[in-house]
Length: 195
Image (cartoon, rainbow, N blue to C red):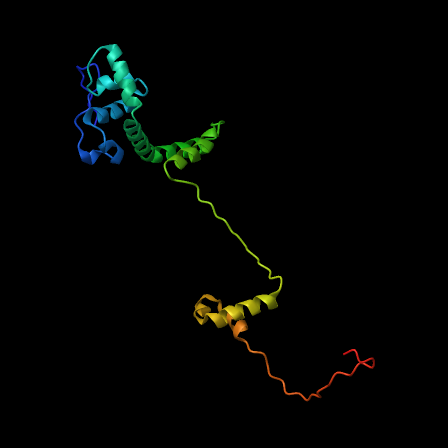
């Protein structure tokens, strides 16, 4: 993508096709696309990046032009897109370097092992976490709940499909009929007649 001409002072960037560009880069004009690629080469030297991208003018003009492009939101989005692609492309090298440094007995500084997760998080390779949650719900008055649910079920039988099987069986359980003998009792009269 970037061509180094032995005779030229600066590298040159050829014309880009739409297939080489991501969504953010596709929104830029040709000069802006080249500027983004040039920034990858020279970092924050905006005036040099503008010159490599093909802009011409005095040093002061290049400085202003480079600053304007570097602070253009569309150009910044394309820079982020390019940085993300570069990070993803570097994962195999980062992994190899991590393993080499962590396993090397001569390496005293193991900070690279802490740096690796930070880098991989930035490219979407997040650490996997697992959560186990146990929920216990105790009913204060089970009889009142059963009565309320029975009333709801009587009003709307269609909710049967939403009630778990064991609970539904308990709700539909009918009370047993018991045969018994009884004696009817009449209230006694008050001797004072103050019924």
